[in-house]
Image (cartoon, rainbow, N blue to C red):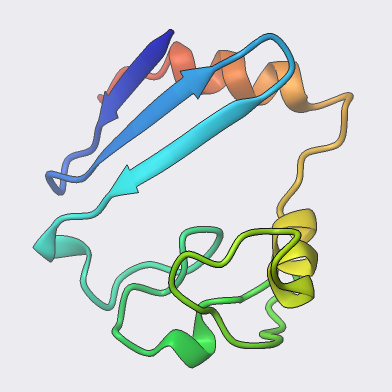
Length: 101
């Protein structure tokens, strides 16, 4: 099942939810340019700073279309943002119940 969350900037997130996984696709808007950091990169056109880990350290270099398994830097980056199993249900519940104020 696909869920969609629209953000005030015009960006939106698509969530494809499976039994034991979630795929998330962010569709950024022009208002987000140079105003984001995190799991989806920095959205500033510089692929050298897109692998910013949760702890604020950038390692490696993002290549378009690279996935975990193809590039160890991407795997380390993805793991740094992973929720622990005890918080996964809270994360999904928060996302699916979000209502802008």
